[in-house]
Length: 171
Image (cartoon, rainbow, N blue to C red; front, side, top):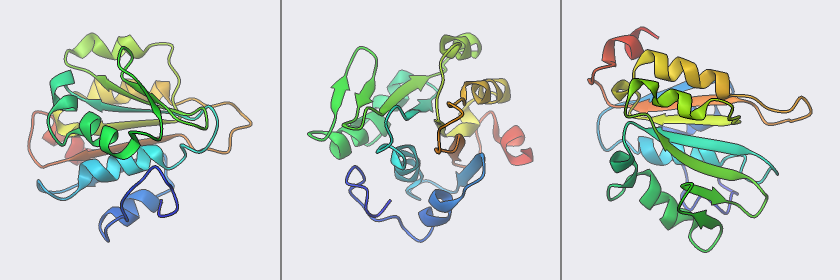
């Protein structure tokens, strides 16, 4: 992460374990202001140097993605001039051929919008705002070619509370 030219900041002491974790599923929680959104964007970009790497980041609504200092504006600060933005698909096309996309799951069945898609990385910002079935469904989108050395990863961040607090805490 430190040597990645797409990531303009050094991870904090709290972000580092989240970024170094090698398991398939990882979670970074805590109160507001803990730099969780930046950690999630860093995690999505960790393998952006690998050709055909595909990452997607989710919020509950498109508005949540595009508010000031949210994922899309922050990605523009980080990637502007380093990658090509496609507004229609809400996707960054990186110099390596990798992509970073943004999606939302406002309604329960919006998860099926991603049917047939394949990603190396799926990230959820504010996981407690999602249903468990939306989260679990996106695991089926974590697929990679057999020859790939990139690990398939599901990562999430959240503040305490929210409609999904109980299922997230239990998981």
